[in-house]
Length: 247
Image (tube, helix red, strand yellow):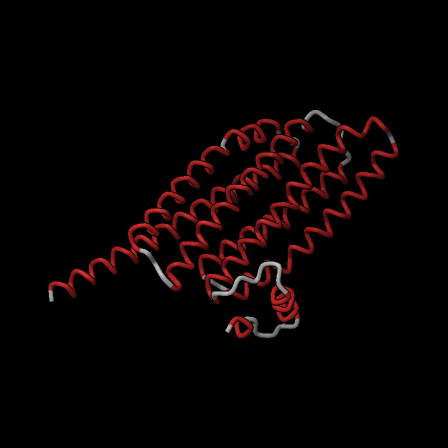
């Protein structure tokens, strides 16, 4: 009986540890969302003060990543998880890495916003970067929600939306080339916009990565760089059930 009670106690402790690390990922995700939102706002509104604040706060995200990674290492060493528990820990480790890099990209956008605050950028370009920022903010919010609810369907939806961000980046790049060709004095400011757009495009890629980790967590299949990834996205666009594909 004592052994049973001890096993039950250990099981409860382990479940609490897993829930804690999962909760901390969502806390980190919320911080990254705030950073990204502020960076895009600073870019669109020419707010140098906000941009500086966003850039200077990146260390908070970095610190949290280290803490969560250490917690996961301790869980692996002490609990030796298997099956779905192991997938959760591995998904967390991968997710916090991508969240930290999204934070880095948000910092770069904020730095570009600082450079651009005093420059005369066409309103149309600021609107375009703002729209691209909205797309990736939406992806980040939804993929964190999918992680919280382990929702495969929403994760698949995020994977498919990365193409929209890529298309937006290509369109904005063409606009910037035209903008620079019209007047050589536009080159410096246009390049700042381009670097910011490139960071946003990479954030879209990171969100897609996290969505694929959610799919792996639920179904146990790594769909990165596979035909299954494209098939799931196509099924989603046709309103067909996706989870069955992971059986």
